Length: 188
Image 1 (cartoon, rainbow, N blue to C red):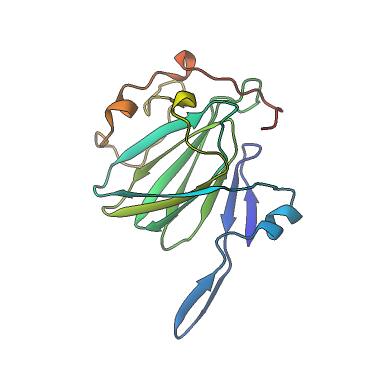
Image 2 (image 1 turned 120 degrees about the vertical axis):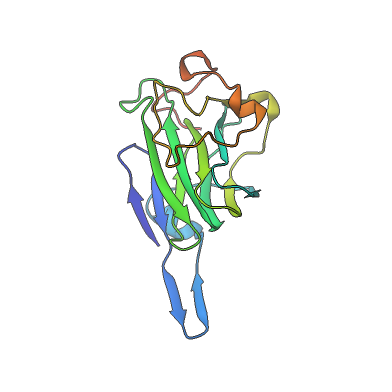
C-alpha cells in the first residue's frame, strides 16, 4: 500500500497494491500494521456504505464535533466520486482550504480524513456506491455541516449543474457560522 501526503497536514491518500492475473485481481483495502508503521494508529469501529442513484448527487460537507469527531477512510466501490475534505482546525495554516480527489471503482484510491475536517462528495456518474470506515459512532447531537457552496471555501466541484441535495445539506450554514471545536495540533 502506498501512502501519499497531501498539502494539508494529516490528510492522506492511500493507494492499495493490486495483484492481478487472468482470473481478476486482489487487494488489501486496509492493513492496520502497514498504517502503524508510518505512525497512523486508528481503531475503526464501523463500516458505512452509501448508494447514490443520480450523477450530481452531493453529500456534505459533514463532520462531528469533539468528543465524537470521526476519522474516515473513504473509497468508491462503484462509479466515480469527487471527494472533498475541508480543513476546519482553528489555527491551522490551511484553515478553510480544501483538497479534492477523484475516487473510483477503477482507480481504487482511498482518502484518509482525520478529525478536524468537513467531508463531502459529489457523484460524477450515476449508480455510485461509497464505503467508508469510521472510528467513532454517529452521534446526532454532535453532527454538523457546512453548506456545499460556501464562497469562503470555494470548492471546485466537478459538475456545474445544481447538485441533488438533502434538505439538511441545502440549509447548512457557512463555515463562519457553524459550530466548530477543533484546534490545530489537538489530537482526538
